[in-house]
Amino acid sequence: MDRWSRQPDEARAGEARGELSARSARALWWGSAGLVLAVLGTSVLVAGTEYGRRLPVAVALVLVQACALRWQTRAPVLVLAVNALTGLAVWALLPAVSLTGALLAAQVTLCVLSATRPRRVSVPALAAMCLPAPLAFHAGGSAGLAVYLLTVLLAWTAGQWRGAQQARRRAETRRAVVEERARIAREVHDVVAHTLSVMVVQAAAADDVFAQRPEQARQALRAIESGARSALGELRLLLRAFRPEADGEPEAAPGGGSESDRRPGPSLARLDELADRVRETGMTVRVHREGAAEGLPAGVDLAAYRIVQEALTNTLRHAAGADEVRVRVAVEGECVEVTVVDNGRTRPSGPASPGAGRGLVGMRERARLVGGSLRAGPLPGGGFEVAARLPVERAS
Image (cartoon, rainbow, N blue to C red; front, side, top):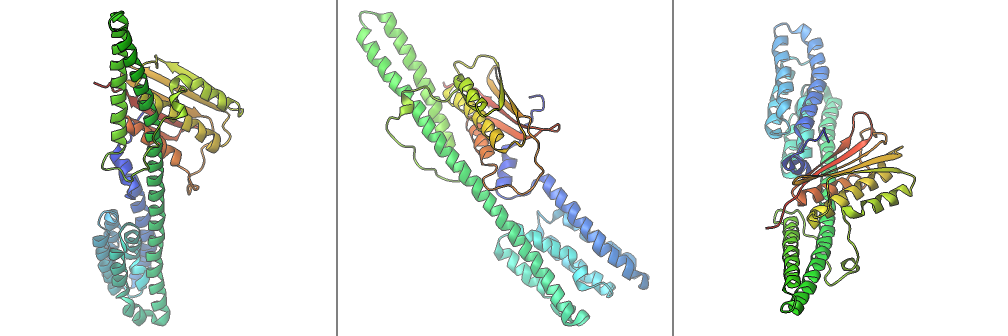
């Protein structure tokens, strides 16, 4: 846990809406600016040798385009206008440069705009980019016109494809969150129902012995008080899960009693049972505990157990070559820290397989529900780590 770092919930929310992180935006800028400088810059330097004084001005305009790409994710419409005008100016100064090449930066920006903005914005931008088509026909004939229109249309279409991918990923994330909230609601319902059942039994026992054995009645009343505080805490977690800003509204938890009311529910006390089930698959599971987990609020106890369970499941399903996993649960003061590390090989980055990442979404939702945070990712030396920090909130 020495590498612990929190990822702000706001940043994760931005990524869920399809917004690029600062690192991704910077990488996009470097990549697109490098493309423009390599292709258009080289063309300008080669073609500008015949135009003398026009060359420095054209080079300056190319640099302006590369710098303007820095803001293409924040203000793509403005950057598109700047790159289109400067591109036309480069073509006017150096007619030897094709119009398609001179407007390369504008085409890159059109692709980004098409991916990040609705069609009511991207379609007019596409139409505006088609306006210089007569100039392409004048300079290169029908072949020049066809090349120009094809590159503009391909840039817009590529952006639409990328935007559809992002929308599908956001929908899968929202669906995973809704399903996890529904599952949490059912489990909280079982916990609260069990607690209230115990309170009813304790109240009846206190009433029976109130006159003859007052000390036993006081013990029953104290148990009722403790159970009521626990139930209030669980209900507060349930309300937090279904706060107004939730993306979706899950199905209501089924009512009535269930078998889980009569048997021990998932908790850190059953961590060894969970580890034994994983060991049956041939995986080596090492469990290390620090501090006493008894007396934890049921919501925190349940969240910690489910995070360990999901992390072990991810190891079995997705950790290539993993044969050992280490689980650490530390109860320190008002915080529970959970770490699950396997020794599997880190897979190269690439398109996520269908359903991949849903377990991480569920674990983050579990941690967020109890006011905690979760970090998950590959380790530099190999393996994958899931680290959660869950604060212990006492009901008042």
